[in-house]
Length: 113
Length: 114
Image (tube, helix red, strand yellow):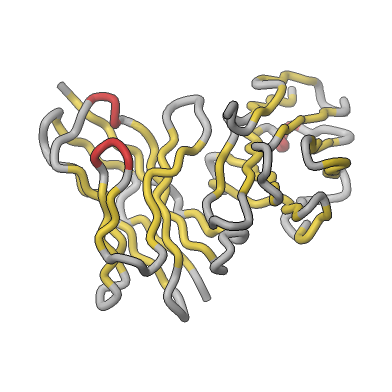
């Protein structure tokens, strides 16, 4: 099993540009989570999908952030337009319904200049 | 309300000596508790979890944690530290049994010197 796959691993962009982060969950895991990690705020849940449907997006900071899960094998987190304060490590995690353990991807380190 | 507090932001030990990373939780019912480890520039890896089956939980890499309800604690221990244990450790409480709503502690950085 390849685990949770995220791409890109690093992204450097300029303020105002659109950024798309991608996640491929572990096969058979039907819940997917997007987290953001910063020094100041630690790990924060942004949004959570179950069976491809967004369940809780209360952590999405503002309308510049959007997330989709068009099928069970793929999810995206988009920031448009990006701002320097969006610089962080973004993690995708997935969970199998029969167990309560979340498995994390390696993360995408985003730097917005 | 559920919460988790990691009592030390940084712990330093020598290789071969015991490790103790402290965590206290607050929960209105019997919680699910986890310890995750994050090595530099890596994702989070599950070390162990407590879900009421046994109060002493053994995890990977020689780590274990004991759930103490009377003290509302879930401290992580290892008898003998290895250089490869240097990492950030997160104590996590789940808001539900399904594990879909996690609250993360602020993390403890473990340094191991030779």
